[in-house]
Amino acid sequence: MANSGEEVKLVVFDLNGTFYSKSSKDEFYKFVVSKRPQRLRFVFEMYYYKLLNKLNQIRQTEFKENFFNYLDELPPEQVEQLAREFWQKEYPENFNKELRQRFEQMRQEGVQLFCATGGLELYVKPLFDLFPVDGFAGTEVKYEGGTYKVVGEACKEEEKLRRISSHFQKRKFRIVEAYSDSKEAILDEADKAFLVADDGKVSPYQK
Image (tube, rainbow, N blue to C red; front, side):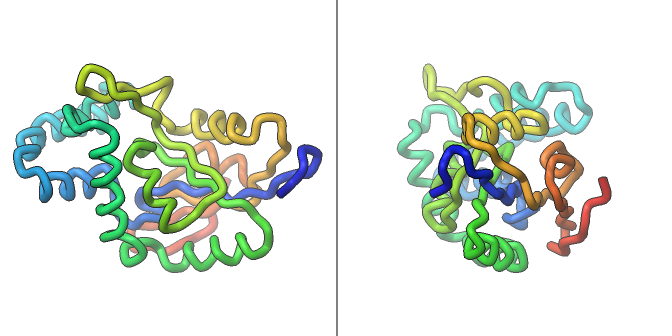
């Protein structure tokens, strides 16, 4: 373990469309519906909020709270159990093989792995029982009155960097590599940055 004066080398990666080849928020919903068919009734509401998000008519935090209304009345322990089943079904088949090999190589070289995702920590966390990481940050939620409320801000853009800094507190860290499926703040902060295309191809990101 690095001491407080030693710089931590870090690989930071996004989850959806990057390490995970699909969108976890969409796929997890399909999985929940397969287990709880009555949850299908939320589908039109979800498409409505997706449209608002696409048109930039809604803040990311508000979008997250409303999109995940389909989890209403499902306590955290039930969601976590569903998430464990979901990730066991998805991993490793639907994960980017090239990135998985790269991350394992970096781990062997003493570089820490950090996943920074906009997905809810509630359902993302069980993935890391299957693929361990040194740290991760997602959108935090609390269960209140039968629904989930976002704590603070959705884990997007600058918030990802803030959460990484918070994780390491006063320890020095350097992002040696970063991976995402779209231009975002973590790419600009890395020594080397890469974009992952829809077909899984990894290519250098031009800052």
